[in-house]
Image (cartoon, rainbow over all chains, first blue to last red; front, side, top):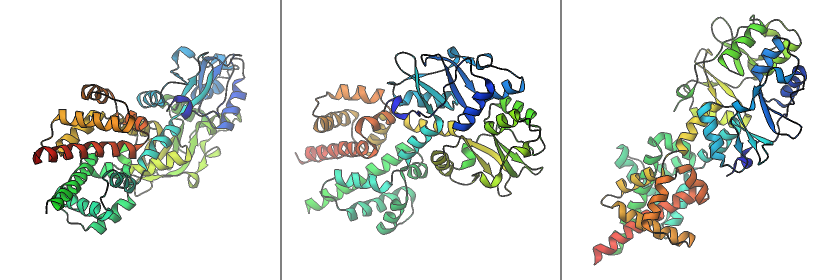
Length: 211
Length: 211
């Protein structure tokens, strides 16, 4: 995924000569705490946050150029950079928004922290059931019942708690990947558990074949 | 993980009778675009964003109570709620911050979108190598070389591209879970690939045992 696929296009461009008062109204209307300041060619020349605006209003400043940060102080991503780059910038610097530029340094969008949360959160929301279905699909010829019964056994081995295959099924129907990761104590442990189930299913199949 | 383990404690409390000007300075100092308004017992009674402040400054409002939103309009999470609840609120409503309250409705912290990005991003950053090590650990008695050689075979079967076990190893050493998910086309497919590798390793081991 590229930065341009993640960016928000609904933002405010400011100009050096815009009035601080008008800029404050524009930012309130679009509900954006940060804005790029651009020249007539839409190239990034500065950066405004709501903090610059409140200070500017208090001190009676007139123009955006009197209160903006220089573009040197702004981290940008290129539209074709991996979306991941914007995520790292946001995470490491606690940014609210990262501007996205094209080859001509024109600002064409903004990656917002809340959009990143939505994207990453979708990954978490995938049902554990779906991962089991993928596993069943992969381990051809294994029935859903075999999978649940192996899972209940692995669960007992790991936690010491006895659970029926039916109860186990009910649990995974209601839980998401995100919950499962927290519950098992991390991604590696979650995967190890699933692999363990797959292994048990294969072992039982081989056992049956020998009889 | 609970909301209280994810929340930021470095925020500004505002009071109904605080001056808009002083509040704006406090928010600039701590660099927070949103603030809870609380009573003397630290209980939530309202909410202020930088947009309320800029409008208040423009219109010459004096006190916070003249510009704040009512606490009815604010979504909160309880300190013992799953952190996940704050993530969903942030993703669905494009929030910058979600206040965290205790049993007495006192505001004890704020979950920020950028903190969520950092947390979710850490998950993405886990090396694929680590997942392979967990798999090796689970499939007892399987050597790293067997795992790489099975992986190279599965890779060829899936993509049609021939790759040596050494090249495959180099790839996973440099890639993260996040990259692998995008590369394989989703969590289920990534996971199916791993199961497929595990299955091939077990099949080869069984094959050797028969000889």
